[in-house]
Picture 1 (cartoon, one colour):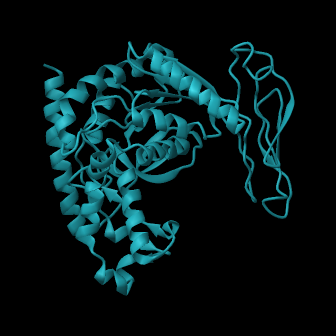
Picture 2: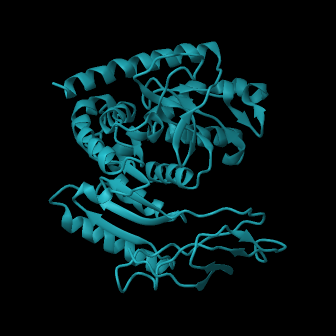
Length: 391
């Protein structure tokens, strides 16, 4: 790591960023609109751009908003485990758009060195075309992930058409367990985001084997399912997708539970809209459940949806955004006082740089019953997997 720093100025799309030696808060200038707004940003930057002397260059494409308020940008390292897979590869690229990311480390198993090198170089070329300064490294030694702020685990055997996510459980658990154990030792302050299916079970395996705190380990869970449901509702009601707020909790799988009691359109509870009486609820939920399998059947794998969902979660963590998103997390009694323990499952959680924290919610009785059934299914499967891992 280079120690010398310099002062430099960089302009991106009409926005000026100024870099000085020390960490300083961001201050917003004045402007009458997007074209006139200015943002002055003070962050540490190594001497030069890092290309000549292998220094760790810092991102310089900071964007402003009309009413930006003072904040400090903390530059971060993100490691992608399973970076040679379709999801890991695209997720890495999507994460590169995050202004908080200083370095992306692409990790793959031994024997994949050539592919990893090719991916890294391809990324570098794309960054040059996009005009960004971001360091990309690759490795087959997981110890290089030390110092990572977020570790994304996508490694594992993917589903094939017609295969249930739970069918993958034990095989992928044997892959995830040693990876999580190593990460827990070399990066004890990191946040682990599990993507590998079946994600609820793999999140629990990663939590148990890493030895990290529950808030430090969470999974993609029903985050993407919730986005799929949101899109379908928006299409039916012919509204912009941003007007729809909805969630799916429970298993990322057949026992998922849509929260119609918490669904709103334009701030209005969906059940208060006359058109809701004609909404094909069963067909919509079945579409959400089958979406991944249909994509796998048509094109071999789901890539862009999961990749963007992963990137959005990483952004939420590194940006310390405190957004409430539905992820697979270790629960105790947050949902209607259901005190289960020893299970990770999709629930609304407040997410920031410290990790994921399930929030307390109340839902309709029919949803409580369905959620209990989903928990029972996941708990039973999790216990079987953990027991076999210890044999």
